[in-house]
Length: 461
Image (cartoon, rainbow, N blue to C red):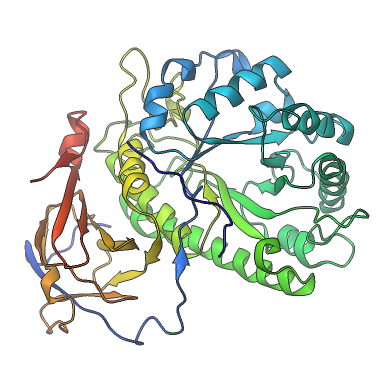
């Protein structure tokens, strides 16, 4: 995928009855699992967030204006101004201006949602206002929020408002990028119609020759209130992967049908997700709700899945929302401390260190997961041990050696030089970086115990 954008510099389930110590040897299996793979470039806008909860939205308290430095330090690259609240009650212009300026001030880009309940002309007027100014210019836009599940719009109605709004918006500025339809899940019947149907498809061009839209997105919160640890590790990841794969297939069809190639090819995004839409009662780091340590690991799964399938952006829900236990969804906690949660630190670890090309890695243990990237000669490996009791030892120096029958195997889509042995603790995430000679240059460790003690990841020397 050619993003056509220069990446900005960012400174900044159940217990298994087996041995407590597992010796792991890493190796590359040439062509066994990874055939015909091309380089998977990581988008410069992959790591996003949602601007919620803001002060006064739905008559509720919001604190985002107090925590912009924390948001910046998380490595966020794009922030969506969207969701049901802003769709039904579009904020006034001066509020939008303040938010756009705040987002740009931390080096991120806004993705502004126009309301489907307002007219196409009102949407075009917003584009005109913001994009006549270099300081306020907004490149990324969306239209409406969850029209099918939440607001019961028909597929015909969704297609109609997308086409009318997008045509009017691009008549003002044909260089903007529009992402739709922000459904609550990947409803195959709706997405197939919007991408493939001769009459309803929004993947073609308007009367001015502009593509109606530039990207397809969806939301997903894979669990209700009643779920377990195994659901976090396995079911939730598998459910979202299935949606992504369906989306990629439908996008490929639309790209071919409408001759969308190169920079005109449709991209895809996840513009809302979290582990649940209804928190369990236990909000502790040792639980399984949004503030839990393991939910941070779930975010790693989703971000790395997005890298694997070349997403444009992933914007979790949300920055800060702490007034109700049921929807305690923020990656930053409540006042007055605004302590970052595991989701914040896991996202920060990835955003600061994973760029360039994604390296797909598999292991033979479902509880031990590996992900990688390479950029400018630096290889990054992320190892997640989701066992509750078992340690895992990995000899990265044996990456080209096939594992014997007693070892857990890890396969990689490319050769990796890494002269290092790691001992991965239960409930832990380790991030390692190596130079082109295989010498370790960075090691970060984050554990559930650290999360319980409100500690950030540690640099291991």
